Amino acid sequence: MWHEDTDSLWDDEHNTLRLADGREYGLKEICALIIPGRQVLGTYGEDFYQGEAALTVNRYGKGRAYYIASFGEDALYRDLYQK
Image: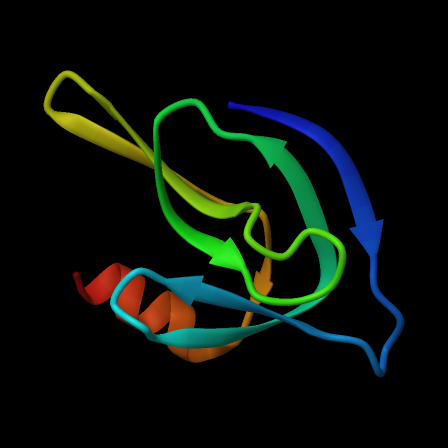
């Protein structure tokens, strides 16, 4: 996975993170444009990067590394960390 570019959002702008199971979470401040390396868990829901990777996971040995390409609402982190 590599970070290709960053779109900075104005205070009144937002985006969404869409998961395959239909859940959506609000995103704010920045939206990184990334080239995913492994499994894409969620994509951007709006703007010119709609459908592009926003949440990825890479498994290494017995561990996993997650990358969230933006700042999300609290519910995103709560749900991700509980899982």
